[in-house]
Length: 401
Length: 142
Image 1 (cartoon, rainbow over the protein chains, first blue to last red):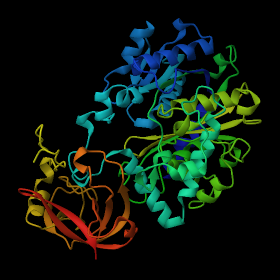
Image 2 (cartoon, chains in turn green, cyan):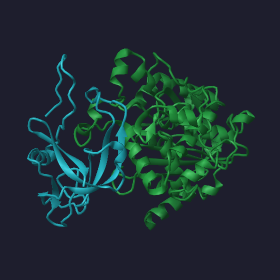
Image 3 (tube, one colour):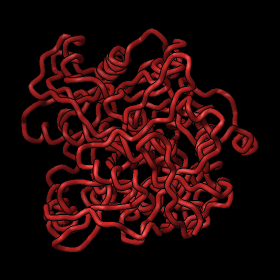
Image 4 (cartoon, chains in turn purple, blue):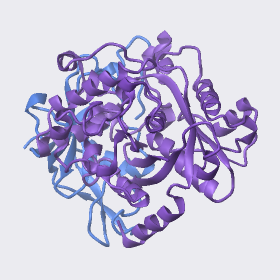
């Protein structure tokens, strides 16, 4: 990172660190929710977040959200259904990195005095779009036709996000000796966490044997390396730290955040093994005045098992190339050194493109979970977002007030 | 070059639908030549095609034949059928080829069982005439 950016991040730290807080979280029904649009799933989650915060609806004066990829001015639909106008309102466009970016933007808007209480959220109906009807089962593609590649891909039988991420996994395996046993530990650990979460989509225990018995999709990925196709939404309420003190919930402070986009592409340079989580995390650590050793729980964007492994390295929880050994030590388990994706994540809870992981980070820091779900003495949570053709990344560091 | 299907026929594999700036690439491929844009100012190659050099932003370039040699940067093996035309074709290899001249290009590695493909293995181009007037540059072990 250039010194100009380092300076910007450091000065932003003093202006942003601990100045805003997440004061409400909520989620919709998760999993298979046929007959409910992604918009209504979002509304369900947002109403729950508003109720959780105790903030009167009339106080919400900002909306920053994201709709399905084929939506336009989605934030207006949210305002319409909640019956509110907003002083600041917009929609984000960075795939799975968008949800943390909504919170980043909310912080700027609040610090600039443009709005006082901002609602952020995202929902999707990926299960219903691809499974609920026979026609949808055949279509089996959530992206609209206009967004699919026209050349240098489909003519070689190259389709979908599974293959894109599998390229990174294969390269990592070749460079560092990473194996599918390492990926299995990630899938099995998150499933074990999901079993503690009554709202999680996946209810059945999973063993390493189950992982290896599952059918291959695009090798090195089998079925359990891939996140869920699910319906679900999450939402949060952001306001100033000052205002948060008077609200119903224990405030969870926004300590730092960072972004990075490897816009040269997933296939360029070594971006598929050194992801944008690296510089995004550095920016967030600097702003928060914290490092990886300070993090008590991580909620990592787990679209695929491998993406957890490489991000753990990129965030500095272990050296590059040592992610396999790190996860095999049991680090990600509830009693491990870095309990990770403690709600089950996108591999076993529900895939709402990172939104539910933000909710989980906040809940862990409130210390209101029953013992079996609570990360003991959690003070700092790191949350990641990743998306937009694999190259957009965002990081959020939260702390207990 | 658009994909065409009729109700009765087996679905056809997608064919490239070139952007205007890619047309010379596919014209050369049709004649079994691999050509990339090369900057007349800084001398570097790039891919996928665009109208200015991503290294120095010069707009002065020439379509230039390349060696057709490279290595496998990474690869995946499709087991799942994502498109009905690939029924019966799995498993097949999609690879990211690091061309000798620098750019990387997505393609297939053919002429070898999928389980013998490795990262960094040397490969060379082999054209596959997939339709009238359409040839795809694929790669075989070198």
